[in-house]
Image (cartoon, rainbow, N blue to C red):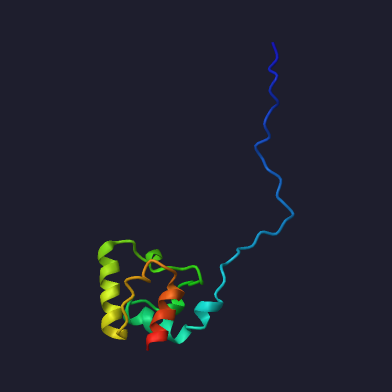
Length: 103
């Protein structure tokens, strides 16, 4: 008795379509580049240029721990004199907007 199933071809033909990476916009964050460099150094202890930050990036992308959130809010208040409690969970560019508008 023959099987009615067709044999599966496990090898796939390569597509002719070019598939590149699509990155999120960076226009807003580029507008805050000097502040972002300072922020990353003083608050996140990171080099801003060692990572990709887009207009969709958030502080939670770096760490979702509650203590991290508390520490960042406190450090931003100490260093920049700005309370970001209501902005922390938004996009990083919103946090930077708030700091820049209050500085």
